[in-house]
Every structure is written in C-alpha cells, then in structure tokens.
Length: 398
Figure 1 (spheres, rainbow, N blue to C red):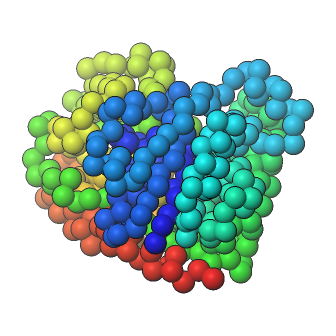
Figure 2: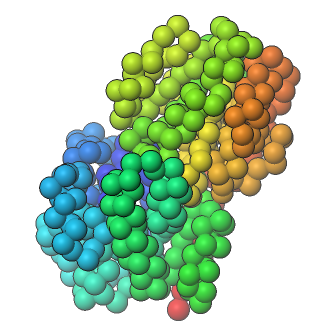
C-alpha cells in the first residue's frame, strides 16, 4: 500500500500532542510495510529545521516539508471579513505547498491520501484534480466543537462576535470536508459519534494515537515526589483555560490544606501572565528540553480540561510513564479508563481539590494509580498494532 500523508505542521521531533499523533502513526504505517510519503507544512510558529530530523525517520517517511508563515495577524483577520472562507482554514492554503503537492501526485500513484486535520482539507480540490487515490480525513478533533465550547466562556463581546463568525464558517467547511472525502478516521469514539451524526453513511474508523512504549520507561520514584504538574502546549486556548481554572478554583484550597505543595506549570508558548506567578509554590518551565526527564522529575499529573475534543496525547504519555493522573471527564475523552482504578475524574473545583489532597496524603492510592496507568498504556496504545488495524480499514474502503 502506498500512502501520502499531508499535515499542517512539521511532526518531527514530536514535541506536542498533534506532532506525536502524526509522527507515531507515520512510523506505525511504515513499520507495517506501507510506502509512506510525508508532506508537512513547516510553519514559522512550529518551525523545525530539517537537519534536526533523524535520518531513519526521513527515509522511512520520504519526508519533504514546505515552509510557511501561517501565523494569524490583525490585518489577515480583518481582510478575511471580506471573504467567505474561515480564517482558521484559509491561512494554510498557499501556492508553494500546492505546487509540491501536485508534483507528488504527478510522480506517484497513491492508494490513500491521508489528510491530517480539517485545515488541510483546503487541498481536496487539488487532490481530486491530480489523483484517483481514496481521500481520508484524519480528524484529530471536531474543530468547530472546540470553538463552540470555548465561545461559551468568552467574555469579550467584539472578540466573541468575530470568533462566532469564523466558527460558523469553519463548521460549514468542516461538514463539507467530511462529505467530500471517501472515509474518515477519528482518534476517539466520541468524535466518531459526532461525525457520524453529521454524515451517517460515511465509513468511519477510530484510530487511537499510539506510542512506541519502548521509548517510555515507567517512572517508579520521581526525583521530586508529591509535586503536582500541568504539562501541555500553552499556545492552545483549552490549555490556557485549564490553567486559569486550576489557579482560580483549586490551587488556593490545596494550599490551605497542604501549604508546602508545589505546582509545576510547563509547556511551550507559556503566556507572560503565568510566568509572573513563579514563586515558592509555583514553578514555571516554558521550554521543556527533555520530556522523558520532565516526567521522571515530577509526580502527580493534572489535566483539568473543560473544552476541546479528541485524545489528549500528553495524557497518553502520562499513562505510559506510569503517572497518577487527575483529570476531568472532558480531559479523559477517548481514554478507555476505569475511574478510580486507572485515573481520577474530578468535574468540580471541590472534587479536584479533594483528589489532589488524597494523592498527596495517600501514597498507597497514588502507587495503585501509577501501576494501573502503565498497564492501560501497554494494553491500549501500542503504535504498531493501531496502525495495522488502520491499514485493514483502508483495504476495505470501496
């Protein structure tokens, strides 16, 4: 089987959730004998020099990227008002990438063209013009659903009006994309149900984001036990909302009961207002150089998400490292967990606070969660098995 994988960010080295989702599946497909061609946009925001990409990864994925500054801008956002397209999508379409895509399609005969995320669906007309391959949209999230959840919390009237317009356009584009492709791959069953309700006759397959467990050594005793940490890309709105909620609804109550508690806030793109919170009890790390070392150092993982969809890849990593995890029902979407056994679910400030205090004072409970987390990762998230099942789905597309 020959597959072309298109994505709107360079996935290697994999240092955030979507990069892990793209690169791990790419390796899984290649390791199952697929001839894979990976064509990403190497954006200014997430720029990754090609010389830093491992030779083995380049070779097994026929890697080739195209640079683009796809950052949002005030002028771009304003000019988009005079367009019918969503600004969320239009900024990823540009001639240089289309030219490279056309060259790929002219020089190769693919069985499957896998679009990573709805933003790359802007190239569907080009694909159909130059290829007879089956087109599959791998929906990392239901994007308009993320923005709908976010907009319920937006207080700025002008911003809310503008984003509502953009999300209305995004929703129309997204549903149209679902109906244009030959099949859809989701990362969670929750997203599968949502998309199936929008296009009920479309072939849909749930493909969890796998990981190579050999790369994740279980942490038995962290360097700094009884520390709490939130580790995520801090340029993504749901993660910013999560930290705001944690600080407002939970953290002060934790300190009342456990005044020596330490909270680590870590992740790329850390807003300045969070950096200013650095103190005896709050540690800010805005650029984690080594994820494995980070997970080895800190103890209890907090994932207090209230918006977003899809699978939280950092949470999967936490399971693989054997971390005790406290999250919300939304944060745990897509994880086939047993509450209280594999992780703790807390959907209110009081419950989240109590869960934290429980793990800070009950080492036996914490160790039980750690052991169960690793077992769940081993049973569920092996990258090669997940890719093998996806190939079988592709072989059945008519």
